[in-house]
Length: 195
Image (tube, rainbow, N blue to C red):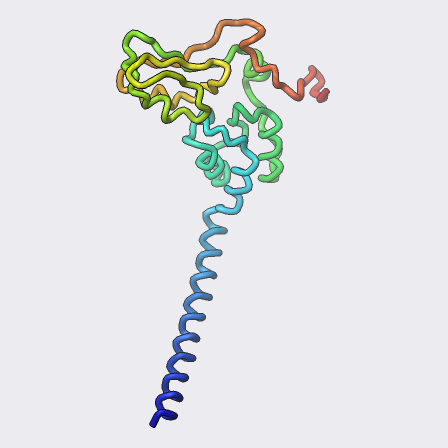
């Protein structure tokens, strides 16, 4: 009797294992197909190329969302301002396309930066802006007026969206040598050659 139960148990276990393996194989096929269709692999490669500042200057909340938009063709690959032309070129190479030319040209680099500015009088020090700042550019204690460290601010605007008192605005810095993007690696000449 115990031998008969052992044989039945063995057949049940083998049958269950075969069913589970089949289901696992089908699920892995479906998972791989969904990944190809959604462009997750392409999105993650694009995301790895982006600087990861999470500043939102591209118009998307975070680098991964921008990478997904680029992978799906919803957004061009030249909207990452902190990454600049080198990131645009790297994204275009991953996509297998020619990098799009910016309409702004050099104005994009030689215009003073945009940064957040907190008006101290209406600021209650709730610290909501400080919590959402992706680069920790806001300082101040709770229940005291906060201040933006302009050297660190990327001008993403996340603090503006979060402020309940609406006392934060994005402002263009005054023209001057300290307020330009001097980290330009490539400068295009009139002929288009890189130096």
